[in-house]
Length: 217
Ligand SMILES: [Zn+2]
Image 1: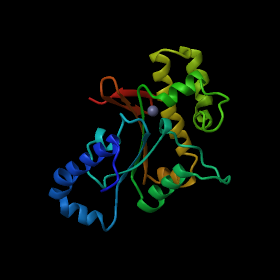
Image 2: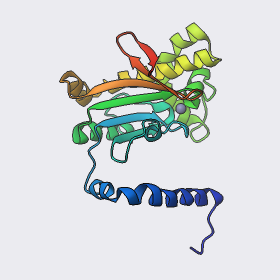
Image 3: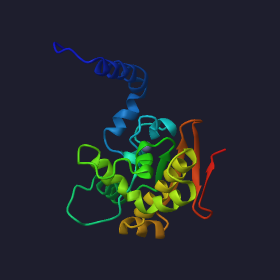
C-alpha cells in the first residue's frame, strides 16, 4: 500500500493479522457456516466504553451475541416520532427476525456517560460540543433524582448508583416496545440487567425481584 498508515491503523492491522492467523484459520469451517447467516440467541446492550467489550467479557465465539453499544448502554423508549432510531432498529431485528431468547443490558463502573448524567456537566451544551451526549443521557434524568437525593452528585457510591439506575431505565424502556412486551409475556424472551465493575473485573447480575445487583460467584 503506497499510502502511509497511522500508527493506530498499523496497530489495528497487526491485530487483524493475528486474528487471521490465530482465530480465523483454525475455525475456517465455523466462519464458512457463519457466512450463510447468523442465529445468535442473545442480544447484549452495552456501553461504547473501550473497556467493556461484551464478546471479551462473556468470552463468546463469533455468531453468539448480537450487540448494540452506545453511550451508557441506553435503550430509548419506544417512540414512533420521525428520527433515526438505531437502537430500536437493532431491537426490532433481534426480537422479530433473529428471535433472540435473552436481552442483557450491561452497565459498567466508571461510566463517563452516567457520570455526566449525574453531574449534568454537559447541560445546555451545543450539539457537537457535548449537546448530543447531554440529550442522549437526559434519558437518565428521571432516575437521577433519587440517586442524588440518596448519595449526592459526586463520589463512587453516587456514580455506581447512577450506573445501576441506568440499567434499570434501559430495562424499563425495553418493556415499552410492544414486540418485547409480548415476547416476554409469552415466555419467548427474557430480559436481564447486569453490571461490570471495571476496577475488579467482577460481573454483577440484577435480580429484579429484589432490585439488587449481586456479584456472580
Ligand atoms: Zn459507559
